[in-house]
Image (tube, rainbow, N blue to C red; front, top):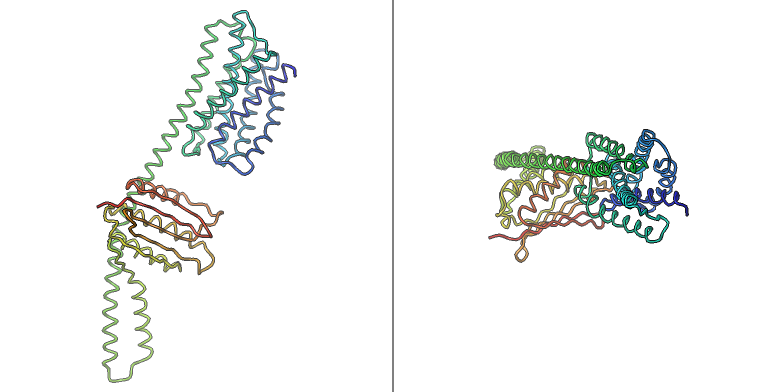
Length: 433
């Protein structure tokens, strides 16, 4: 194999492995490995056609060629990453920038080793077996470093949230990086002063550091924004508890008054000398049935849980959903009122939204269990499983995060299970005195 072919394969493999390294910690699409291997051939072809180090050109032409290569590989690697992992297009292009800069840095490090030996007057024999093994070892080390540092630390919970500003900034940092790389990758580097070469080499790491700090800054900004949203949602649910409590009290009061009026009407109807009017009796029966329906007061042993179940029972009734609740609210006394309301309201809202989407009326049921087992408080919610094609809304996404936050606050554990068309949420809290 001639030197040019080896050079093309080395550069293509560096870019490909860098892109694969950024795909590893993310959620893969079906047949991700085959898709990644399928992109290796276009990478080899593009490297052979555009790689400026394989061309003998002036510095300006070299910079232009390197910029063309950067844009072409920016698109190609972005397509590869998007095809292999479940990620949006902006995030895939952002990972492509990192793949290009990381692979170019690895190549420049090896090139600087070659330059160092040429300065010493003992140039490396690139065709010798020890040098080839050293290249492979350097490539393996580069892959290991990228996999254990950048690819795992840059994503937030296995995902990227890249906006247009962050992507644009990263793209132009990459352009500046590549313009300077033209000096370090070309044959002109031997004619430059050694201190200048080392300064430019350090400058390349400065660009990488700048891009990394930008990534961390945007990530912290996104985390802070998410935290602010969670706090806002949490505060709104605290306020919603007070409103729900007042509404439930009003409903119970009106139902109690209605029951007294119905009882008085029945007494008056029975005391009358004339035979009872069937139509009047039917109206009284209908009013009594309505009073029983809306008198959804619960007696679980916990006022907050009573309010939640009353509120959600009425919601289930309006949506033709059966809510079966076996609850011992006395074991939840260690909860703050707002936390307890938010926990059960979020879980039941999610269960109701899942049940509404079920076309079979007989499967529209939700089972809630709250009990004490040994020294633990157990909360189980079983509802119909949400269809796979039904994506959660942004509000539901934050509601789940609020639920997890409350579970963590009280040192509980939350597990979920989907089986036989049903979705179960099980939470265990250590019982407190």
